[in-house]
Amino acid sequence: MTETHDLPPLPAQPHGVDWPTADAAGSDWPTGTAASADHVALGDLLDHAFSDPAGDGKGPADMGPTHAFLAVQGGKLVVEAYADGYGAAQTYPSWSMAKSILQALIGIAVGQGKVNIFEPLGAPEWPQGDPRAEISWDQLLRMASGLQFDEDYVDGDISDTIAMLFGDGKEDMGHYAASKPLVHPVDSVFNYSSGTTNILSRALSRVLGDGDLLSQQDFAAFMQTELFGRIGISSAIPKFDGQGVWVGSSYCFMTARDFAKFGLLYLRGGWWGDEQILPNGWADYARTQSKVPTGADEFQGYGAHWWRDIAGPGTWSANGYGGQYIVLVPEKDLILVRHGDSHEAQGEEVKRWIRKAADCFGAPA
Image (cartoon, rainbow, N blue to C red; front, side, top):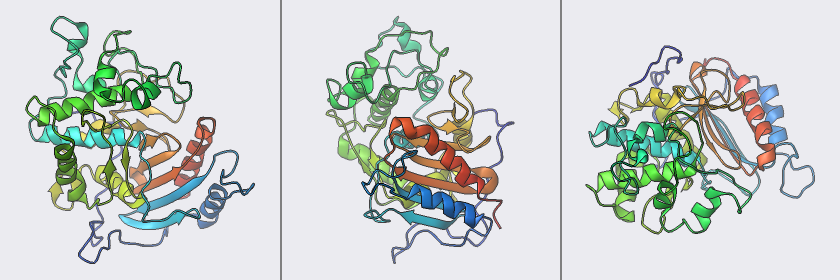
C-alpha cells in the first residue's frame, strides 16, 4: 500500500505480556516499571506539567494545565499521572485525535473490500464533470484535496471550523465542507481541514449503508463491533451531527487508558493478539509522509490522518486541540498519552515537553 523504506520497524508485543483487553474482573493494562527511563528528568517534567503556580487551575504559564499523562512501554503501563479532580475513570476529549480513529474505521472498510482509497470519493455535491468529482479518499486522508477550508479555532468571522461545528454547518457537516470550492489543483497543496474529515466520515457512512447514510445507532454499533470492542475499549463516546453522521473531525471522548489502547493497535501494525484489525500496510500508510509538503514546523510532518515526527524522526501521533496527544515511538516501543487544556500559543511548548518526555526513555528492558 505504501513505501516503507524510511519507516522504523514496528515492535511486536513482548512474549508473556498480556494485551490490555479487559477481562471478566475488569482489569486491562498490565503494569510495570519504566526500567529504561531517566526517572529524575521525567519526574521534573511531570512536576512542571502538573504544577499550578498561581493556584487558578491554569497550570504553568508556558504550557497550560495537564490533566492526564500515561506512558506505555513494552505493552505495559509504566507511568500514570492525573491532576487533582481528574482520574483514570474520567473520559477526556479527543478533539482532532478523532481524525486518526476515523482513519482506522476507513481501514477496516478497506479490509472488508468496501473502499478503494485510490478511487474518487464521489460526494453528492460533486456531479460528473465537476473537477471535485476526481478527489480520492487518499487525497482527503492526506489533506491534499485542494478544497477551500479555513481551519481556525479562534476567529468566528473567518473560521470554517467554528461555523461547521457550532454554526450554519452543524446540522450536516459533510455537506458544509463538500460544498466548498476548489482553490488549488487536487493533490498539490496541504491544507489541514476538519471539514475534510467530515466529508470522509459521511462517505464512510454511505458506503456502509449501501448508498444511504447509516443511522447514528448503526454507525455507533459499527464503531463498537469492528474497532472498539475488539481492542477492549469500553469508554468511547462519539458525537454525531444533525444527519446522524459521526463528527470524525472532533468528537470521541474516552479514558486516557483507552486512548492508549488505540495507540497500541497502531504500534502493533493493526494487530491485536492473534487478530488482524487493520489491513496489511494500513498503519504504515498512516505514518508515511505525504508526497504533498506540509510546510509545517519541525514537529509536524503529515501522513494519512496522523501527524509525524512530534517526538523525533520515525515517531507519529494523533493530535488534538488543546494539547491532546497519542504519541507512538516505535524504536522504544513507547506510547505517550497527554490530555490538557493548552491555549494555541502554548502549543509549541507542549510539543517540546512531549519530545523531552520521550527522550527520558531508552529502549525497553
